[in-house]
Image (tube, rainbow, N blue to C red):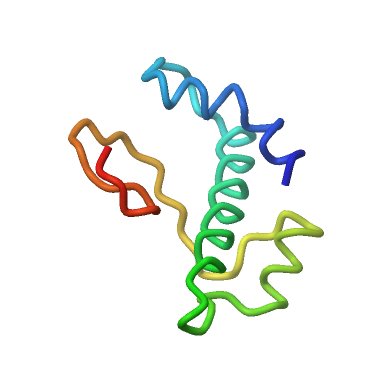
Length: 90
């Protein structure tokens, strides 16, 4: 997980600080894998229901950076206020 964070540090930092930059295929791909990893982690926190992804998909993401088939990662800009995954108003 640390390697994914390191690979994406500059891209995530630019996005957080609303800095305009080209998001080419390479960084976009790495960001998508980081996003899926983050989603898997947040999903694992909810222990009162079955996980959205199975063990095979989690292993492929961890070992081969392989996003599950038929998965779409949407990257967009949000300028309002809302809730993050922990349910805290931001």
